[in-house]
Image 1 (cartoon, helix red, strand yellow):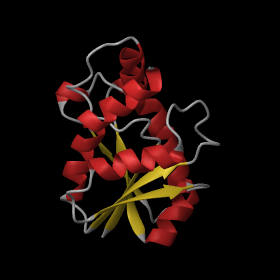
Image 2 (cartoon, rainbow, N blue to C red):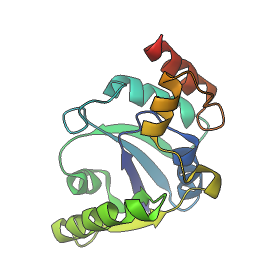
Image 3 (tube, rainbow, N blue to C red):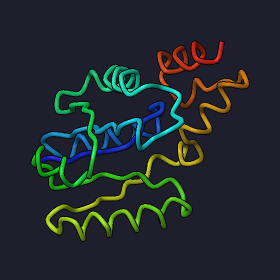
Length: 158
């Protein structure tokens, strides 16, 4: 069975990687789907950079493939033969948006199931946006992202 974990991953964090690690154990193939810039205006990293950072972060997994997708996620699921969409929930504030998205995806294709996963509690307070903000102000983000992501962020803010 195949699954996809979609997102902008601008940048990938240890919270994402916690979910990726656990999801990779549940499915034969896990796609990490990075969405396009047109939908995600104002992203710090380009799609190409996000693909590279994410590929570096998951290079030790045998059953993971990092891909770019655009358009409806459920259409990509059909092309990739994914039956499961993995979504991360950090806090109750994420739930309303994710719930609506899951219902819409179900309405578009009732054969695809959304599975919500929570990262380890030590990562529930972080987001890519918060990581970028702390990094832009010179704060230490080493507990929340791999070193190469931290270096890439520093490069953006120097």
